[in-house]
Amino acid sequence: HPDYREVVLERIRQSQEEKRTTVPIEEKFIRMDGKLIDVEAAALPIRYGGVQATKVLIRDITERKQAEKALRESEERYRTLFLAAYDGIFLMEANRFVDCNP
Image (tube, rainbow, N blue to C red; front, top):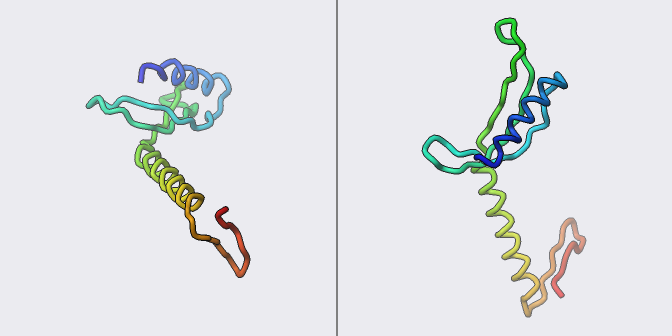
């Protein structure tokens, strides 16, 4: 994604200068087919053919991000129903109350 191009280049420079792997960050990339995907990217310095180089690791995390979003939405629906219910609802774990609606 054009918005992240400078970020990627800066992380490559940082990896080369500091001679260490960068902390993975989440970014958006555009695939060759034009589809926007979520990725996790990190850069690490290597020697390739006797020359200092940078290896960039990119992992598609689109499915994980979609699952996280679905979980957040499900939790929000549950919480809304739980709080709005006219009947008393309580949750117990190991014979101990852990939650109840107002």
